Length: 489
Ligand code: 5AD
Ligand code: SF4
Image (cartoon, rainbow, N blue to C red; front, side):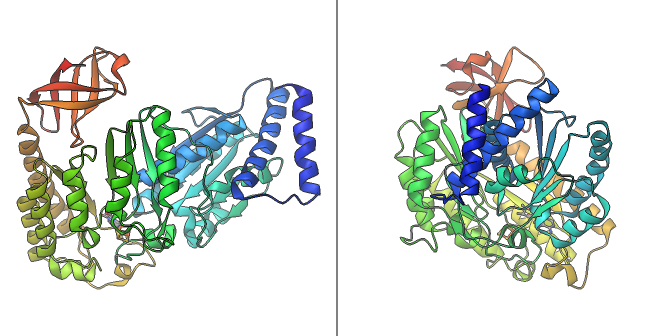
């Protein structure tokens, strides 16, 4: 950047600030702060004689990974160079708090960051994400981790540039955490990890208050984006080379409620399907209580929606499901699965299961095993119940002893693994469409792709195939993935 140009930019932005500039909207306001940061970074580069680096470390779910793409978009706009190393000028931790382990991990790593900061006094440390929405966490960091520079939450990640700018040149911790918001800020920059696929938020927050879950407290109430904004974003992504999108929300099945013109998730899918050039549509997460027949029909008719449904069951015991506040019974759940399998043959069903919810008896647990056997999940994420302060379950009687949980967990995993290996095997010998995603980590002559049901296949091919959909013969099942041969490009 030319120096005069830069000085002019600083002058313009300063004048704007002095004149109490009115911005047309939040997006314009944030671009203004990105420009101010850009000028700062430029000056620092000249002072230090090198580029400034930034490292974002993401913990938790798809939603957080997608948020990190937005943070990275802002940092690139400002002029930081991305690095995987935490020996950087700016380190951002986008945190998760869904289970206690996630929190402990962050505290552990902060000790390491403090040593790095001693060696690089210019270094800035920023913490954001779900964990920062908890008051006790912020208090603890203020008290015991005073070297942290910036703390912000899930509701104001769009303000990252503004917060960062305010922290430049200061040695004081800046904390900006909002309790909630109704605001959705559109059209900020974002950098995709993959050129050919992308996550797309369709809604934020959760209204369900499952009794074990902290998410509604840290992500706030449900807010849906306008369908036009979603479609526009996907059209732009497709124009930029994306062929597969993952529509993201804590409970996509209740998408559209509260919008001026209410629309169902199924209707949104119909509209997304029409986008030319888009090849594959995935979504997560579906709550069984809101899964409509209309959605199943749309999936059955669709050419683009993948044969995959992530449908967290949490427990197979109707008694526990009630205490979990899930609003369905074991029978309701099995009925939905039956309909899905009838209307969409070859659908892959995956789930989340919690073991050791307070009061879980051997009989309750056996109900869970029974559901796993009846549904025959392609894969299941299993979690040991983690007590989250502030949720109703945290104070419930009958917390299950650790040894009992461990024993049940082991038994459950064994059943799940046997079933998913058997499931994977059933496609051996077929020729299927595969989206090529990356070079194989272990063998450069191979590439790795995904079937529409999300299973991985490795086959001979070179990286020029990445991003295209090819036909692959599934030669052999290896339990959770296939080895195959490409038959058509
Ligand atoms: N303990 C264990 N697992 C939990 N999950 C959410 N809260 C908890 C908790 N307190 C799991 C649920 C959810 C997934 C994202 O995390 O299974 O579907
Ligand atoms: Fe948590 Fe339940 Fe909301 Fe999922 S639906 S985020 S488990 S409260």
